[in-house]
Image (cartoon, rainbow, N blue to C red; front, side, top):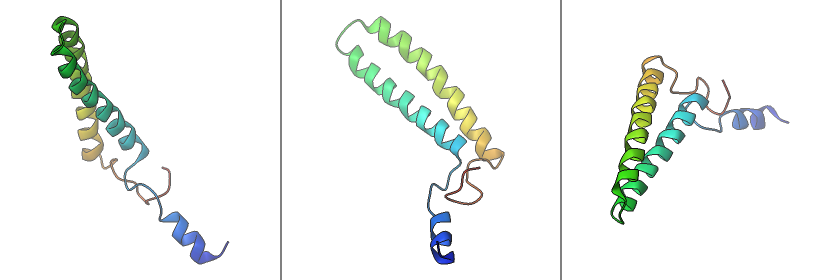
Length: 85
């Protein structure tokens, strides 16, 4: 592989860390779930959807706190985009 090709490949990838990506992905899933519960509650049996929403809201708070910690500790972004670490 040529030096130019190696340099191009190393610069390809996500600008955020794997840890931040995992937290963001989990947060996205929980928020989608909350939206689904809101819709399901309109169809009846509101109690179960309310209970599940409370649990997921607690998880969202935990994930947001973790995301804030990653940003505060400088662990949100990759040191070198496209490289694990």
